[in-house]
Amino acid sequence: MEEFSTASMAEEIIKAVKKEYSSLNRLNVLILGKTGVGKSTLINSLFSENLAATGTGKPITANIRPLSKPGFPLTIYDTPGLELGGEHSAENLLNDVKKLVHKGIFSGSVSEAIHCVWYCIATPSHRIEPTEIAFLKELLTAAVTCSVPVIIILTQSYSAKDARALEEVIRRENLPVEKIVPVLAADYEFDADMIKRSYGLEELAEVMYSLIPTALQNTFAAVQKASIDIKKREAQAVVANAAKAAAVTGAVPIPFSDAAILVPEQIAMLAKITTVFGVPIQKGTLMAILSSMIGTTGTTAAGRSIVSALLKLIPGAGSIAGGVISAATASALTAALGEAYIVVMVRAATGEFPLSRLSSAEGRREMAAIFKEKLTARLPRKKA
Ligand SMILES: Nc1nc2c(ncn2[C@@H]2O[C@H](COP(=O)(O)OP(=O)(O)O)[C@@H](O)[C@H]2O)c(=O)[nH]1
Ligand SMILES: [Mg+2]
Image (cartoon, rainbow, N blue to C red; front, side, top):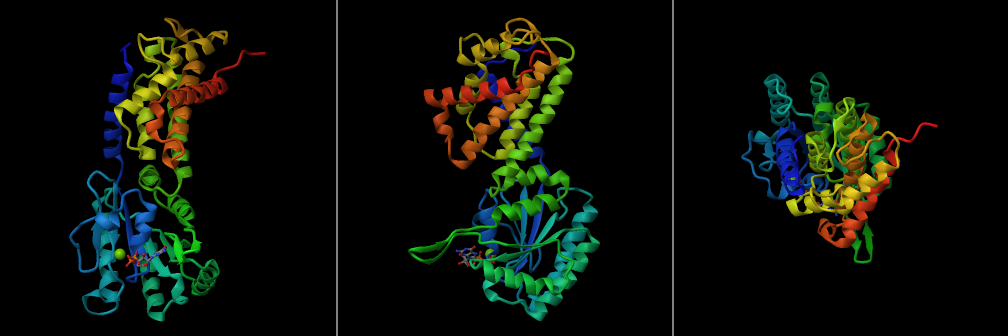
């Protein structure tokens, strides 16, 4: 079996992250709503790249401007305004939208389809004009025909009460709309001593996650920053799959030296988790994580003794040093590694545990403890 050092494992993971990222399907979201309702603010609050501020892109039609960033698997089709008149008339806009949606469908490529439409209405406006209702009805009819989900977003909802009232008004129109979600994308400062905190972004993320095609869910988990929970769930699914695969591999007893704990399957697993969290990770940090959890080849790192010591307590688990391990043990090791890595990623993503701290002695001790806890919980027990 191929021998890996922590340095080469880290390199392999970084390579795999790049590959994983570029293999993600592209998510395409179309955003409609009048100028000033808060489309740009929302885009920048929901996604991890500030597409609305920095994104460039030539308008593809008079009304539609794609926003994207190289290497980031998301395109926002922004409609700078839903103004009624001239080439920006509602009719022209609707035609442009239909053309874009049809083009995506006929391309036959999942990365070119429009996966979700946001229709933004500002809550402080308190109303939706008859012309806007008429536009929405036509838009929704077209969207239903093409199976594109539409979410109505009530933006700038610093008054939740007003948002509920507006939602009622819209509901009365009986539109075939999937969801109406109130949000306040950025904190609203009424006064220096009176700030309404932003809300609704996590709910919007959950709604989107549930409406987009399954093939885009991992992309969405990676490009959004509003819900850590979505990232965590997606990462847990990755771990479950890897653990299953490891059990299959381990069903034929394999020599499992400490250096080989991270076989390609586990490298792929860690790369997928890293991608989902979108945490920019350096080789040094990865090496610190790997060595605290599983130890380094040829060294007496704490990690190796953790694994070896724990395995010694389990009859039939096999021993790490030159022994063979059972399928259940291979699966447990993989799951524990993945779960511990998720804990580290969640803490890094929330800022609770900055990556810079991971290489410190304290950070390493904490990571080793997390891995030990996960492994203890996962290792097969002696049958009673
Ligand atoms: N505090 C706060 N301001 C917002 C919010 N949404 C929009 N705004 C403000 O409303 C103005 C227009 O927003 P923008 O996102 O540019 O609207 P767009 O024309 O639809 O893209 C800007 O000054 C924003 O700062 C919000 O959720 N919170
Ligand atoms: Mg804008």
